[in-house]
Length: 132
Image (cartoon, rainbow, N blue to C red; front, top):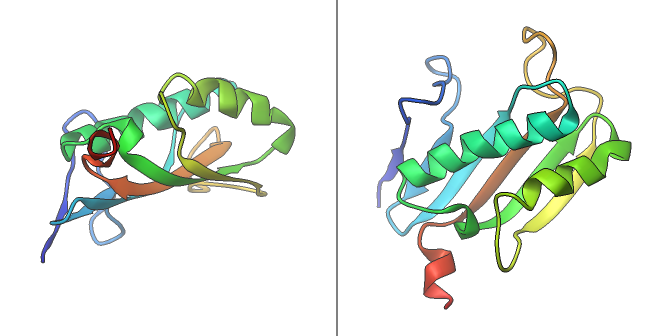
């Protein structure tokens, strides 16, 4: 079964021959690459990151609640409450399984100001609706 990639027009595409933002298998299983956002605070960056992820998943025909698992990398673990605050704005019902890890840096060293959060995730398109 073939994979498909999706690139919504209002989200930046990765440089050629580097990575795909989202890959979806014909059975609906999807993976979203590590995505970063922008903003001055951790809250703003997480919210921006989730907004981008939402664009990719919706372009593939899904919704945020279709995410089953996510890995969140932040540069300051003391700001974890800002991560959870932003996350509550994008999910309802059962939240995805999650990992939260503090790291030294995320994203590209060429980006200024440097991002403070990167999130990747996976799930099944339609999965949240099938469970009801």
